[in-house]
Image (tube, rainbow, N blue to C red; front, top):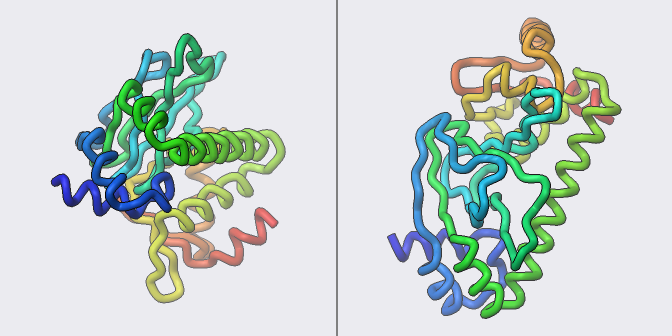
Length: 229
């Protein structure tokens, strides 16, 4: 497994450009964890969850709003990072819950061990800061989308994002292989389950998408792109 860890870590954006001998040392701090579909990885408010990298599967990051609604902030796909660090007495005020959307494998490093690595490899500190900034911008864009775009545009944006991240081209279609429910779509786009069902059903009838158990097929990607342009 050590060689598998090294091979995987060499190819993730977070460690891009770090010498191979350093990757060997870094990999010793990471531990493989496996979660079944719907298992919780950590909860909002946990003290020090550390840093996780998705190896296989998908993780959804969930936030409970003040009025008790659930919002999915982001879907984390293979090679992407999630979690947070606590440095000194500084703890993030805005945290989230992480849950496996499907059977998932992750590499985990504790808060304490990751801080050790940051001291040994300053380049890693810069990369994790850039990655955190990127995630903040993604969250901001999603919140801005929830406030400004119509529901159809929000669902179209989400499907296009998923197609870029995990979509596989099959002929003229792009297939998203993930067990994404109408509930998930609603929580990621700030709408009701009934509205998500209505829009997806209409698009299916019109030949824009096709939904089957465990996957979404995008048939007319130009239509979705026009909705968000």
